[in-house]
Structure formats: structure tokens, C-alpha cells
Image (cartoon, rainbow, N blue to C red):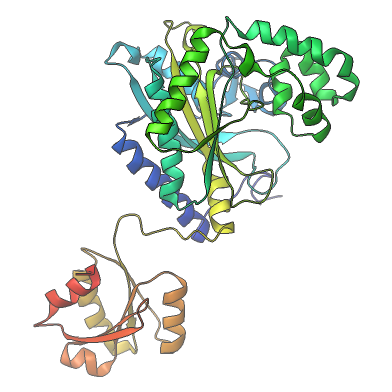
Length: 423
């Protein structure tokens, strides 16, 4: 009997969980600042939600979805991404009937059947935001700003924004006609998947990671040059607003996104710190037709998503240390002997109102205890031996500044707390 976790899943604990909690807490704080409200959707949906939303021709629908039948024979699918489920919820509950734009964010686990590798698991965690009901380019700039700001808050440096427009139902057919004409004599140079994409959805060829396919499309026609007046005006306005926000950008004419629902603005945030082709941190775009395709009103929308697991791995790889999100300082209470514990508990009862505290439940060598405290991000160590316990005295080490202080617990309690708070 195999009792290990299934292939492509992982137990998350310790340092990994700390990174993920920091990412999620930072995102939630930022979403609140931008006035996005949380929404939670089911872990599985009727399969049609994803077939219709993501697109029948995408690799996700064709190869990667976890689809099963329930006891009544209905086809259900574990969600492989967040947007389609959010759109379904918005339509089902008529959330669009309230003041627009409707601005929501989500955070949850997703599922895709693919070959597991570092940063790409079969069960993974994703967070994102959606803004529905407004086609004003200002909302495009806000979503991009929010995405960029999130990675800045997490500690990433040297960020670069890649932006493109993939047009709309009016102008995209003209491009696709030219693009297919360009590809036709070069079909033998495409991979087997892209040969199928040529007939089903040629735009997906831009998203292929194989070198030979990239070489084919590199010199081909660019959708940006086929935009209608409305799409051109829209992307020009988005760029103008990004300049107002001092957000650096680069127009990447070969940029597409992996789902069929995107229209007009699409974008990715990459980190120049990551010296590999896999340097995309997150991205998104506008999907003005998806809500009507789901049977809702004709209503524009835009959103973005990031992979929490991949972001955590990249933070650790780049040695980006999570800050203590809630502002609490971490204090390690070291009892040098068994007789010290009554006083340690008395101290911890007060300090835990304002600080994260841990107690060493088994007295050990002081040097090893201080090394452990430093390694685990404790800012201060309170050291209580027999003499301190009997006289109600406290010896405290500032681990970061390598300074030591002494306080009388009965008369200098407030001064001690001010020190820990950095006052």
C-alpha cells in the first residue's frame, strides 16, 4: 500500500509555508488597498465551464484537465485556473448588477495533469484579480500596476513589463489570414503540436516554447500591425497611463497568453534577476467576450494571476527573505534551566500580546540556542537563568544589532516593550 503523497502534489510546511503565507498575506493587503473584494469558488466545476472558457484547442483542455464523472454521470473537472470559475460565479449570482467595475480577487489550489517539475506541480496554488464591467484603459493600467506592485512588495528587483495587444473579433481575423498564409509553406518546420494549432488556433503557435517554432514566427507578421482603430487607440492609452505611473514597459509583438479568451491588452511581468527563459513571474490581460460567451451580458473584463508555488521558489532562489508581514517582532524566550520556566511563562503572557514568541522547552547550550534563533529570524532573545528568575531581571539580546540590554521586569516593563517595538 502506497501512503506517500500522489505524484505532482506536495505537503507544504516549515520554510516553504512561510514563503507562501508571506506571498498570500502581501497580496491580500494590496488587494484591499486597491479595493478588490475576495471571492471563493468551488474546487471543481462542470467541465463545460473550462471547455468554453479556456478554449477547446488549448493544451489545458486537450491534455491537462482532471475530468471525472460523478455518480449521476455528470462530467466535472478540478479547476485548472481561476478566471473561468470567477466568471461563472459572477453570472450565476448577477454580481454585475452592482456598481461597476466589479473588482474581486481569488486565492486557491488548481489542478493540471502534466509532468511534475520544480515550480510546476499537478496541484498548485494561484492567486489573481478580476475587474469586470469597464473598458476604460485606466483599469488596464491599474491591473498592470497592481501586478507590478505586488512583485515589488514581495522584494523582486529589476522588474520588466512586457505588453502587447492581440486585437479583437473585428481585426484579429485579418491578421490570422495573413499569418496562416505566412505559415503554410513553413508547416514542415513546426512541431507536431503547432501543426495541429495551425488549423485549430494559430495564435497558440506564438506560445510554443520549442526553439524551431519560435524561429518560424520570429520573422512573421505581427498582430500589433493589424489592429483596428479602436484597439490601437486602446493600447496607446494604456501605454500613456503606464508612463504616468512611471512603470517601465516593452512592447513584445510575439507575446500571447495561453487561453483563448484574451482580447486587446495582454501583459507579463518578468524578472531580469532570473537568468533563464523561465523568468515570467505573472501576467494577464483583457477578456471582453468571455462573460457573454458564458451567457451573461456583453461586458468587458480584465484580470491577472500568479503562481504562488513558483513565486515562492523564485524568492528562495534569489535569496529574497520574507518580511514579518504583520509587523510583529519575533522573540525567543530562553530558559537556561527548569527553574526559569515560571518566570518565562509570566514574561510570555505579556509579550505575546504584541510579539511572536517561542520558548525553548528544553534547556540547551546558550550558544546553540542563539544560533537557532538567528537562523529562524528571531530579532531578540530573552535569556533567563536562575539569578534572573529569582530577581525578576531580564537579559535581552538584539540578535540583528549584536547588542545586549538588562531590564528590571517589575519597574522597566514598558521600556522593554518599547525596545522590542523599535521605539
